[in-house]
Length: 156
Image 1 (cartoon, rainbow, N blue to C red):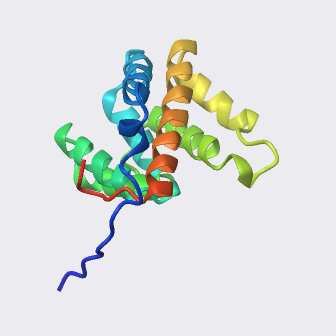
Image 2: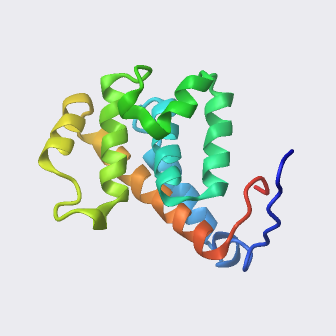
Image 3: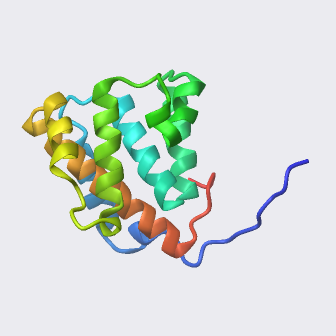
C-alpha cells in the first residue's frame, strides 16, 4: 500500500515568475557544466546536496537523470551513504565530500576544511574545481527555492 502526500506549492516556482531568472540560472548551469566533469559526477553532486537539503523535487529529478545516464541502482541509492559504499571512485568521493561540506556550511567552524579541499584538488584541476563549486552553490539555490515554496516532486 502506498501513502500519497497531497501537497501544493505555495507559489509557482520563483525562477519562472521573476522575469529573466530562469534564463540566468540556466545560463549559469550551462556554463558550470561545460568544464569537462563527468555528467554522472555532477548529477551525483546535485543528488547528494538535494538529499541533505530535503528537496523532494531535486531528489526525484536527479535520480531520474542518473537512471537516464545508465547509472546502476546501487550507485544511485548509495549516494546517500557514499562513504560506506564501494561503488564510487576516489574522484567521485572527493566531489561528494566537497558537496557535503559546501552544503552544510553552518555545521562547522571552517565550512570546507583544507583536507576536503586538498582531496578535491588532487582529482580536479582549477577549472573543474570552479565548476564543482558553482554546481554545489547552484543546486543549493534550487533546493532552497523549492523547499521554501513547497514545489511538488514529479511536476517538473
